[in-house]
Length: 206
Image (tube, rainbow, N blue to C red; front, side, top):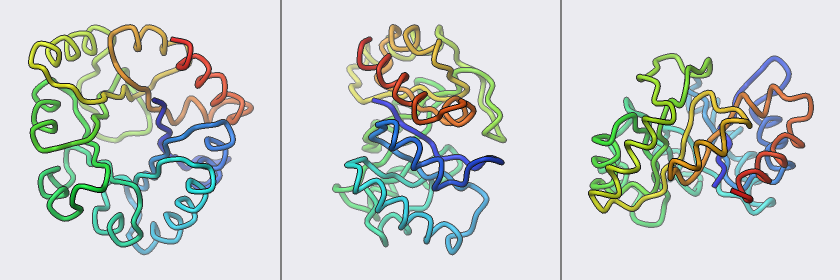
């Protein structure tokens, strides 16, 4: 499972970044525009959603539950300071994907009990794309969370995020983590679509 978190850079707009990820074969896109207004996000979300549908990719939006419901995106990702998952589930019902950000096993357990569909767990290491960063987890952090999940019989996809490079992926997946979320690593590459293909290749062969 590889998730791409859209990002705006000097070279690429949000839609450019999504197009490149889809060209590289990514099947899960998250539109993340933290500081924008709903009015700014809506037209970009509609275009991104169309691109994802044409490519057969899942499309989730960061934080904006009402917008997700309005345009019927596939789901929403909720950070630690966003709406609680329980409340989002009440608004959206059972047919939308809801993911939550976690930094500890306690976070994972809480999201699981509130009916999250997957967990974005991080940060793996320091990352420049987030302003308020939780404590860095590293491989030991992931191993510990995965073993606590197994002991508690919590079975939910858990996706590593935060400053992950191509070389990190085999070791992260070896901890029992189910997926990887990337942003900067792909967009900083000379050929982002090719970079995405290479990374998918690594994940599919692990």
